Image (cartoon, rainbow, N blue to C red; front, side, top):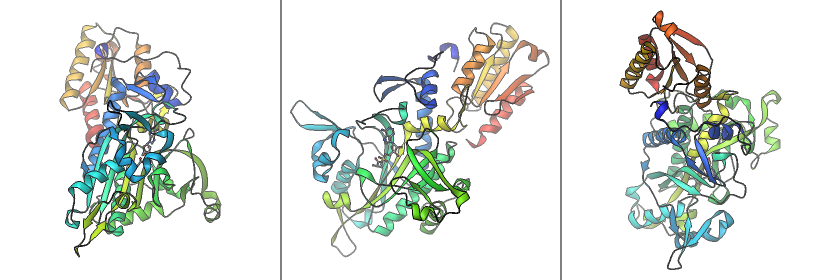
Length: 445
Ligand code: 5CA
């Protein structure tokens, strides 16, 4: 992409409505524009990161054996009356009537819809286990939408649902989700810690939230600092292997880590004092096992091995896809702007031409652009006739992790400069070496 043709409406001033850094930077970097409270348009740069995050979620869900599908955003109230949640959901649910006066709603989650699909089409235990998921827009009429995409009213969420014959099988599905989430967040450059939580309107007793520690987080959390030493890394997981998934689950959840809703002071005090931490966190996902809550209410049974109908055991599992943009920025920025982790960066590197219009500089930039594109990567070339300072400021603000700077002076010596956004360190090298370095950096992303 060439910056001269891109739609990147960066703001010079700090927008006064933004209280936290991620919201401020997303507005300043021209990623989103508010349309009404808690509802945003995703401008090209923001949309690109949203897609990157969504792709990682798709890849990791499918690696775990879960099937993608898509359900409608506007649903009939009837299903929700069956489960009892039409009344329970209260003011958070956006309700409307169609032209025939039928009650409709904008879906805040989709347990009812998926359970209906299941009960109509699945009749036998032989069709289990089954896990399907979607990445779809949700609407919750939050009392206090704030912090940009972090607490929106309209937001993008991955919601997955498992159907199993027994509680044991459903707990494997729970563990499998936990493992796949650990891998998902790490690919985005995030540490998200599973913490025992409260299930709220979804229901059930078994639930973990995934929290990214950040001062601006909305949840208060209590944990044993040993949990922050755990990393998932490059493990080879067989998602059908019950013991292996349970092993990872144990490893990541036996130490004390809870949100304030489930915090237990006496238990917490058993953690050695120097490891006892209180902090704030951003909830980027939550997994639930709620047994037969919905299958009982909506009569979703299968014929069991003995021929008798049994209600299926279910769980649901969410990832806050749009919220993740805010969480990643909260975790990775400096005073000049965003610092994207390589896994989610909108463009893989920037190319800054210090003297647009200089034949040698232009030619060198075009060649770099071609070579990097040929690697299957996407550079963002600042080909505007602007001062170098302005170009650097834009690159720093939008946060591409690598920048190649090209100018007539360097080219006289046959070199360009490769700069890391994270460390600020620069290295001079010939253009081919810079391309090779970029290829090497992204070999694993
Ligand atoms: N049905 C279950 C699992 S699919 C469910 O709805 N879970 S949830 O309520 O915890 O939502 C899943 C994730 O969506 C949350 O962990 C959070 O990251 C994200 N989320 C929830 N509400 C909002 C909101 N108002 N704005 C942005 N993201 C949100």
